[in-house]
Length: 83
Image 1: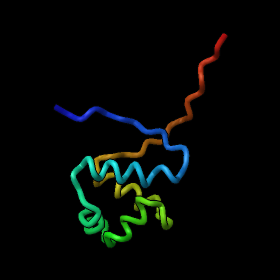
Image 2: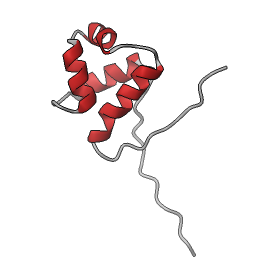
Image 3: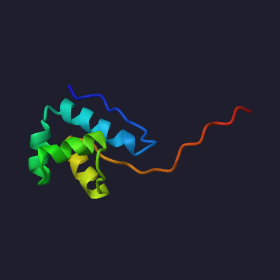
Image 4: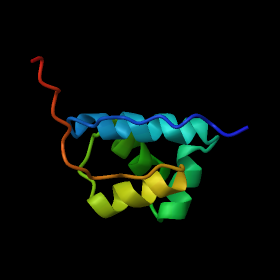
């Protein structure tokens, strides 16, 4: 049985690290494993997850790919009119 697809609306940069950390844990991976595949240290992975340091979009996309996530840019949804 496959995992249900859960989408997250990211409204601020501060949200990305926590979402990546949650996805990493769900994938059963350690910070060390992620770091090794990204060519960075476990400490740097921790900083990314805590947003303690700046990270490039390329690094976020690579990290997301490793934990089975993808980023989708789409036009913003507008609330339906009440009339």
